[in-house]
Image 1 (cartoon, rainbow, N blue to C red):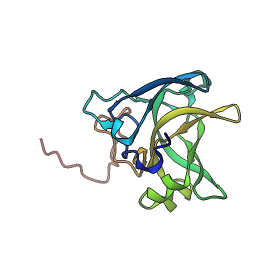
Image 2 (tube, rainbow, N blue to C red):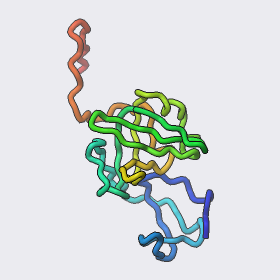
Image 3 (cartoon, rainbow, N blue to C red):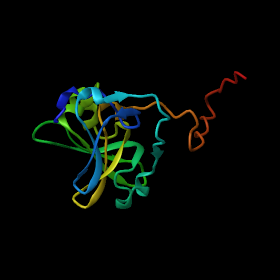
Length: 169
C-alpha cells in the first residue's frame, strides 16, 4: 500500500513501532506496513547521531545517521523548489539536498540561500554523483543559527582586554 502523506510526522532518530511484512526492496530488507495505523511513534532510546567533521564523512558511511555544523557556502535552486545547500565547516564541504516540501516547512528558509548563514544538519549519509551528501529527513533536521553547544568542543577565544568580564561565581 502507498501510504503517502498520511504517515505520521517523523524525523531522524525518532522511535517508531511498525507492524508489517518483510520485503526486499532494491536489494535491501524492509518492513512494509499495510496501513497508516501500523506506524506508531514510540518512546525508545534515541539512536545516537554522531556529530562529524565534514572531512570525516566518506562513501563508506552511506545510510549512517550524522550531524554536521557549519556555514552555508552556496545554494543551487532546484527547478521544482528547494535546492542543494553546500555546507562548509572549515575541514571540508558537503552538499545537503533540501527538497521542496522540506524547504517550505523551514522557518526563514530563504536564509539557507545566504552564504555565511550558520546551520546544523542531522540526516543520513547518501550518495549523489559518486560523492557523499547529508540527506535530512525533514525540516526539523535543519537548524538555522543553532545555539552554541552546551559543552563547546573548542575553548572560547579570550575576551578582549579592554572589556571587563563579569565573574558571577
